[in-house]
Length: 324
Image (tube, rainbow, N blue to C red):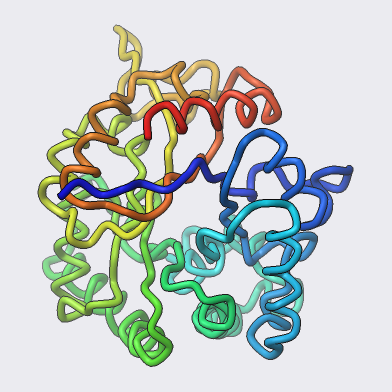
């Protein structure tokens, strides 16, 4: 039986700002609904839209959040802890870069930053249950990513120990999520230790195949790695619990290929694009997900090197609706 995919929905992280209508949950949900979106994925790391600490403590606040969304005509699809999840595991090479994701009182203190991040991710499980949600989306973080390419030759056992340490950090979080009946769908993404199917299998094995460890499927990152993103669905559909609809293009030439990230966005071989402007086969993806019974949300995550956010959002809702 083919699944009934829900949507269109919009991840709000790339649109939040200090100016109306992007500066409050009430304003931004009305804006999204006006474009035709039926759901919104809420970033828990943006205080303009959501107070995670309050949500973990107060059912009244969660009821207010649900009411704001309902009044606008949208549902909450998932809570996102991407930035906090990133800080659960940070290689020291990235300390300075990732400090920007943390509050000032833990910056410059990796141990305090990690403790804060773990607490935040756990609070998202409590908040999700208060909101009636079964799924969150996040990042795994990374301990080994600076060793992505096998030169210089890696010390024996380094990668295995990195994944063992990732598991030591995440399994207690998964157990906490299990207590509250909530899954974590990880966006498989370069910059994380879990960036493709092979590393996903390593992570899942290290975590004892934990039932709460799942996937937020995003084909854009697979296209830029030149993976078969349709076969990925066939391999791992039983773990896919969320879906970021995001387009990309890969245009290698005589100068550069997959490793073109030192160039500005416009000059890269691999670039994110607005829906329909890139090379991702969304007809194939929606068909494959439906074939395997995926019945959760299709959520636009917008990034584009050419168009404005407003144009990308306006074009995204009808694009997803037509695919469904």
